[in-house]
Amino acid sequence: MGPFGYSQATLRIFGDSLVPEDVSRLLGCEPTTSERKGEQIVGPNTGTSRVARTGRWSLQAARTEPEDLSEQIDELLGNLTTDMRAWAKIRETCRIDLFLGLFMDSGNNGLSVSSAQLLALGERGIELGLDVYDHSE
Image (cartoon, rainbow, N blue to C red; front, side, top):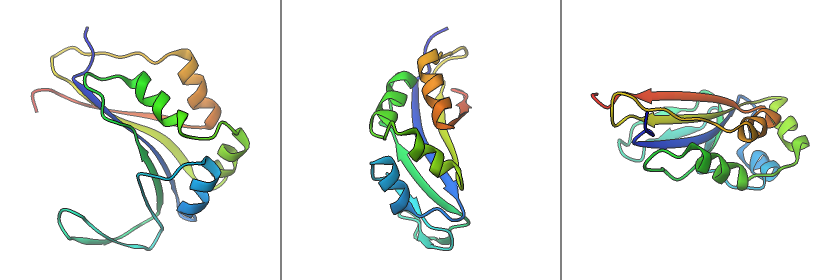
């Protein structure tokens, strides 16, 4: 079983009352993208307009090829506060997850996450979500 062809990881925070500037202040980092509930969003590629259904603050890690989830978790958490009170404050009104897209380059790929990184995610209340994309699609 080999590594996935590549991976893309994004820390995402969602909440109806989310104010991106407040999240940035609490975490000590500016997002890759953000939006407020009700904000008019225009797609950069399509020009299509939509209204944000909820607030969102996202921080994207650099794509790794081949997949290196460990590096991506370290990159994301390394840019953010270690103050657990700040994370708890965000969790009062928001949902936090680490969304990971895994792109296969063969019929059998795998990965592992260290216990230290699982603990770091858990301490912050970060849910881990994995999307696996078949190489044949």
